[in-house]
Length: 299
Image 1 (cartoon, helix red, strand yellow):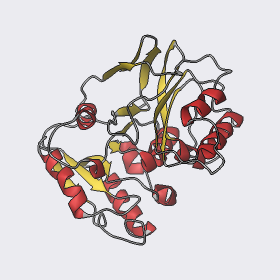
Image 2 (cartoon, one colour; image 1 turned 60 degrees about the horizontal axis):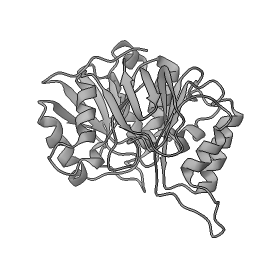
Image 3 (cartoon, one colour; image 1 turned 180 degrees about the vertical axis):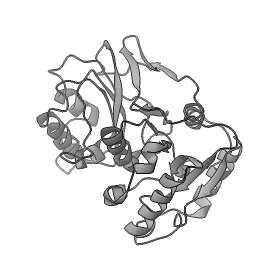
């Protein structure tokens, strides 16, 4: 995997909206936040556009993203928010200049489209981390600090308690994954991630429990779980159920889907649609162990 150059004071970073619409009031705290690290913030021309739920038309959103991909002075592209929409523009983007001059792509949720596509097609690391929509004030909190640490090239290690259902073990491998629903939507496409020998991270929000089961069964049938080295489950947040209950929590559904395998599994890792969303360098090799505690270190 290729590591984009780490940021330094004075660098330019871009904020764009490849998916759902956002307002200036929602983005302004993020501008101030990045400026505190002496970063120059460049906004996309259509970042505040609105076309139904999207931040402008597909053409406008892709044009904004393409301009930032092609601009050699931009060292990181931060997606303003998720929602839905990146899947509609991914095939409109030309990554030729990006491959010549890699830069950090930052975000989570719908941004999983970019993480998966870039890893599979170009072998460049990206950053699964908080987005401007999450930055609501000026104080430093853990999620934002880990994002900054990753962008500036500081060593990242995490340690947390071992939740219920977790399966002990130790593994090393490249970290892939992101939002489960988005990964499900990429199945069979040129953006579909290769999970063989990898450590898979999954998170999701506002899904029906039966659909979590359907998506896990789909991953299993597609062979995505067969040769995993490890599985990290982040937030499975705000799950929904039908009038007739499914009968299992999201984590119990996942545990049932992977019960026949031997790789280590941890649940409730603090990343995803939760108050704490620790930064994860997607595409980088990690050491991952589950025992009395969960330990995760990036190489």
